[in-house]
Image (cartoon, rainbow, N blue to C red):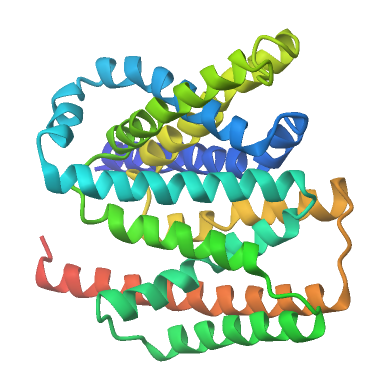
Length: 310
């Protein structure tokens, strides 16, 4: 019995380390994109797609997931879903990279804080899910935050809203495809690698390409976008399997918090009074959402144990 408990505890520790590492990589990613500021955002995205697919090829081979990968292309329904998710994820990545290099890191942080709240709304609209009272309060607070920032700050936070909506829709549509995350990412990057390679070849022919023309360090950074894309996903999937949903739910805020700290203390983006109060309202909404999620899942666990005491 003790051995089983020790093994479970060890697995949980491994899960925490892997999951926290994944979210820290995502949260610190603005540092990487800033290092590529000299390269147009769209060109960076094209390299990210191509190199990510090449990186994932041996991963799928080692994990023996090629049959699952090939099966996507033999199913018209699955392929259509993956085309839709490819478009959404590429748009999300492009906007994120562009916003980082336009010194709008705070807007990206706000967007990813809002993701769980956007997911609640998407569930209400598309899945006809009923909102619990705390969820309703959290969503209303987020709406108040956006309206306040628009009025007091004089600008609608379109980057934050677009990032949250595109990522939320991506997750919603991906649920309809019974494809593992690594295989899904490989399919998405392959679908986008074909036009990406054509575009990069065009840039090279016209002398406008950054790759092989900007120095070895720049080339390595462009190739390294594959690691920044695939590694945290693999870490997250391995870690999440070892943790409860509530723990993973809390961990997801490591990324936007890290990004927020980078924006304020490293890149010195201005924190106006309007922005400060907006983040306070969003943090309050997130706190309500998180507390409700923890209590909800604990109730489910108690009910499950009562039904299956063995």
